[in-house]
Length: 135
Image (cartoon, rainbow, N blue to C red; front, side, top):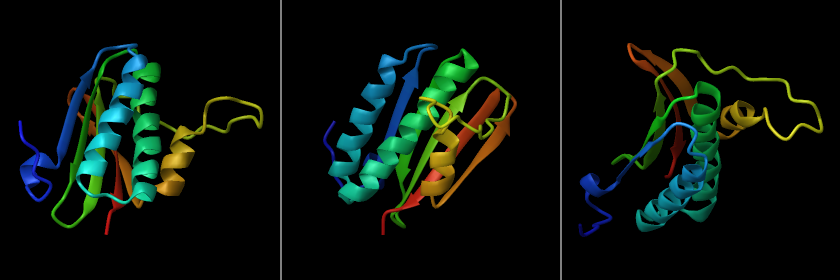
């Protein structure tokens, strides 16, 4: 499939991840980085998007025990929206991590770095999302 940066149909990235497939998190990061470069997204924004996407995908795989569906879309208005859907209805909550803890800061990062974020409950689970302005 040929890629055309100006074509809205080619500014979407989709991936399905199996439960507990943590190596897939790195693959999603690489695919997202490549797509964002292709779409002309500035490197600083790509860094942030890659970090936040990694946090949401990891949370979905680690905390739900189920697989996940990853979608990233760069809109015509140069807004990047990343969604991670999983089959668990439990809403993610920000934790207070100990100073020496190696985990527990994911949602804090999303909250601090995203322009907007949220959780949408669905009949079959939830979608956790964030948006960044690429303009």
